[in-house]
Image (cartoon, rainbow, N blue to C red; front, side, top):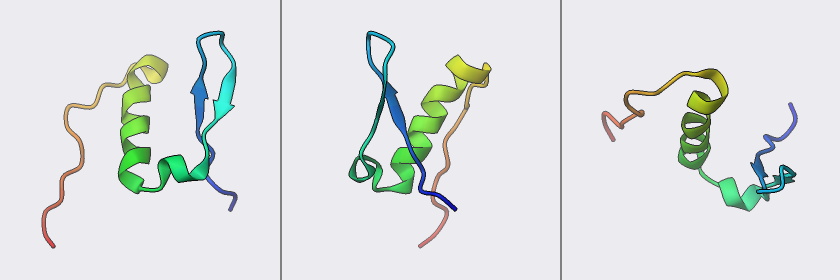
Length: 54
């Protein structure tokens, strides 16, 4: 499986790849995906994932 690649869209419409160190934690990837689903797919998250134990 290939590495996960994330991009940021610049004001001029160009897509710029984010460095791997920018998204070191799974929580950051999750946050970015949740933030992008409503504009892209029309899906809005009502709550995020919360830890339930140690």
